[in-house]
Amino acid sequence: PLVVLGGHGRKVGHVAWNPVAENVLAVASSDHTVKIWDVGQVVVKSTLAGFGDSIMSIAWNHDGTLLAATCRDKRLRVFDARSGNIVQEGAGHLGVKGSRVVWLGNEPRLVTTGFSRTSDREIYLWDSMNLAAPISKLNVDMSAGMLMPFYDSGSSMLYVAGKGDGNIRYYEYTDDKLYLLSEYSSPEPQRGLGVMPKRGVDVGKCEVMRFFKVASNTLVEPVSFRVPRKAETFQADIYPPAHAGRPALSADQYFAGQDAEPVLVDMESLFRDGPLVVAGEAPAPASATKFVRCATKPPPSEASQNPPPPAQSPVRRLSPAPQVAPPPVESQTPPSPPPTAATITPAPAVVASNEEANRLRDENARLQAQLGQVQAQAGDAQQRAQRAEQAAADSEQSLRTVRAQLDDAVQKAAKDTDALRAQVDAATQSADEYKARLVKAEDTAKEHELNCQGLEKELRDAIDAANSLALAAEKAADSLQASQ
Image (cartoon, rainbow, N blue to C red; front, side):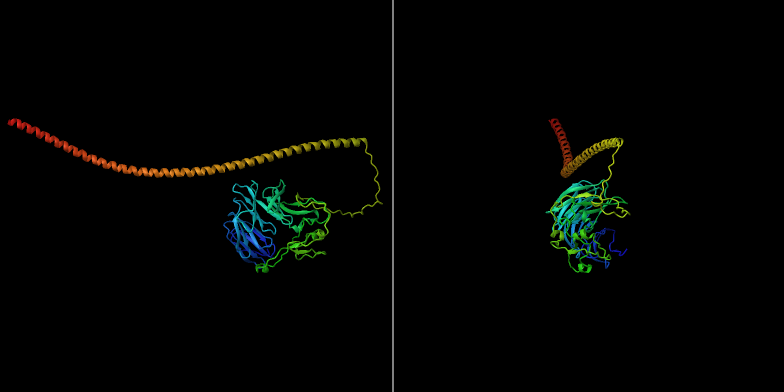
């Protein structure tokens, strides 16, 4: 390796080069920090902290002054990359699965992808200057794969690919809204996607985006998106100046506080001169590629000064077409000159025999019958696919209904539990009061029992005294009678 950067205490999860400054790299780690490196000097210039959990994605804005990051703590943060201060922070997606963030070109807008609390895949549009709440929310579907967003500022298109499935949806961004245009589907799921820089697309074929899809451990498949035009001239309306892949500032200038717009390449020069060579040691082409600084209005090109006749409509819907084809093999035979009117001679007529004609007719009828069978099978397959899609949609709707009912039941059960807990607490308090009263009653009963025992003794003593008095009276009466 040219350089080894060893500043983190735990494993590294994400890296991103600064789009403007040379050798400035952002590195996110499982130690809950992002370090901004001057790779040329092998020095950490700033550390972005304040994350409550693992960092799930990072993204630079167009001039490399701000860095956005999503985190497993469900927070979205925007940092000043040089000072390390948090510029904005807000609550992101409520799901615990992976979340990704991307800037929308030179607009102060962000897009995040993630999951809801009920595992629905979502797309949020944000104002980077106010992360209190998203500008808009889009519910995509209920698949389990993480959504990977990619933005093309030249066509204002947001591409969203699902990890683990074969779908790539593309949206048009305009007036702070995302409009779904169409969807590319493939039976081969994608494990990851890489993007060809805009300066590498085929301008002559109106290609506006090219992905490199990781389909398996041994297969990387290109997926091309083209505007369906047949024009042979440069299409200036779909090819504004694009990133040239060259720095506008040195690392020292950047960390000293200087700002700059990205260096751009005029796409018309790629149409005229061929692909751009970015490597510093490569020889310059005979017709040098023009570079321009980003401005509010790009410099006019030859095509814009002398526009072609308006035979084509502006880009609206893209036609994705995976370009997987073997390279052409050049013939070793030198090409012959094109025929002219003087050299073209009529070919001799060939008359087929009746037997050959009958055989061809039979073969044609057989092929027509096979074609009809194949078309019928295709129609049946299409109907089955439509029924399967409808069943899947019904199943998804039923699942959402069941989840909603389950959520309602859980909320009701929680309320009932709280009410029962309050009743139990009240009953417990009443039982304690009754216990205290019972103890007091028992004490009173014991006191009354003791009093009764004393009264019984006094009563017995009184009876005994009365009996003694009666006996004495009888004796006195007897004595009185005897004396008389």
